[in-house]
Amino acid sequence: MDATQAAPPPPLTRRQSMWRYLAAIGCGGGFWMAAFYGAGDWNLRPFLVVDLLIGVVCLVLLRWRRRYPLAVALFVCGVGGIAAAASGAVVIAAVSLATRRKWREIVPLAVVNIVASVVYFQIQPERAPLVFTVLFTAVFVTAIIATGMYLGARRDLLASLRERADRAEREQGRRIEQAQVTERARIAREMHDALAHRLSLVALHAGALEYCQRLSGEEVAAAAAVTRQSAHDALADLHEILGVLRALETDAPPERPQPTLADLPALIQEAVEAGTKVQLHNQIDNLAAAPDTIGRNAYRMVQEGLTNARKHAPNTAVDVTLSGRPGTQLLLEVRNPLRLGAASTTPGSGLGLLGLTERAELMGGRLEHVSSDGNFVVRAWLPWPA
Image: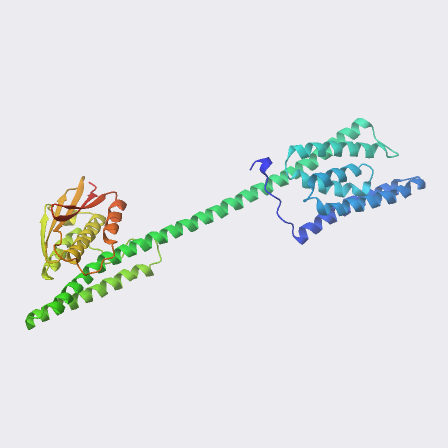
């Protein structure tokens, strides 16, 4: 941290403030006692009473050394030149000012301190040589200022470390929050893709039972069986997906149900048995060779495509095409004719295609959905590592 931008001093506790005052009193009292007993002439001792009063005033002024650091330090150091009792307050005020590490304040303080100290020693009855006094005073003042600057540097270092720790904690909190948001989005995608497929089958066959009055008993039983099985599967999927919510690790891989590309023919067969006209055009020799991530996302994309076809274009034929090989891309296409006549009454969330686009982008691929030549086409290009 730059010296011109030093951290503000932390507030002192009662104990910290107390020992500073005690140190000032002890130092000033020691010098004053030495001056009192060293004064051979009793006529000088009344001046020591004034010296003591000045020391008390300087001690009281230390209370405002943080609010007005330069003014208090200059005044205390200035009067310290004539008052031995103020020597303790001089040291505390000088060290306090030096912790700010501002040369425009330290230089005047050092000059006043040296001049005041030289004046003090020169007015004593038994004064030392001037050269010795100046050298001793310069060394003493330098030591005081160096101590204060060291304490200020240490204070700034601790403040910087605390700031870095707080920033790291905040960043960790943001990463955790982002991980939670990502996890919730993943859970939402899994719930939408898995449950929408099952519930669309329930809605399809329930609608058939409602509007088709001439169904035979066997047909009604078959439709009811498909409805019951689809509802049962939806509950099972919901139970397994909600297990993700109980996971402790936010970066854990998605829990079951997690199909692969090899499960795609079973999905197509399930849709056919439910009454959807679906044809799979598979140009991949081994579906099981696809990585699990690609297989799971491709499966969900086909599942969502079949769900959309049942919702928005029932009784139409759906063509599913797969092609690609390792080292290139997996091309997935779901094509169905646009609905003619009245719009579908099955409600839609409008999030299915958005979720598929997000899936593709998260994998580094892309997805498009277009209406062309009377068909609605969903195409996805997913990277397939070698």
